[in-house]
Image 1: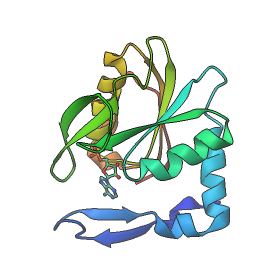
Image 2: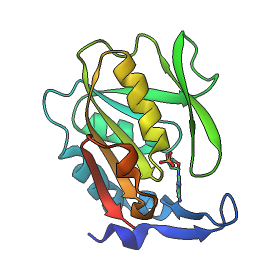
Image 3: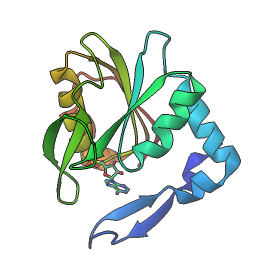
Length: 169
Ligand code: AMP
């Protein structure tokens, strides 16, 4: 399965100079989508307690993998969306800035988790999520993404973490 065949480049979206990786062709192809979820699932060990995914596109892959490997899913949401008490983190994106939140009781000390998202660009989003998780005493076993943008060098920001990407550009 050549997953790159299902990723569409959209130049200058959402801003001039950004080449947006559109994953919707992959999602609508049942074989490509299934293959993606099965590949991501291979990296989830038995001792993982939760799959964690950020809004918005982490909500596409994270829960599908969690279901497939019989784990729970924890959402990371944009500011103001979660109803209970939260911890939050503000960080910079490839384009702009954002604040993410997680419920304060979502994970417990010692929980081993895997974070799943669509695109690893600068790594800023992932770093913010990792900091939130670690502030709760939980352990990030692995980061899994569909696409890694090597030219933005996200691994530099995420040194020491185990990162799996299915496609690299
Ligand atoms: P970053 O924090 O820079 O690693 O950005 C990661 C988040 O922004 C991911 O959750 C992506 O959904 C989105 N993103 C950043 N750059 C792109 C891109 N070139 N194409 C598609 N999505 C992107």
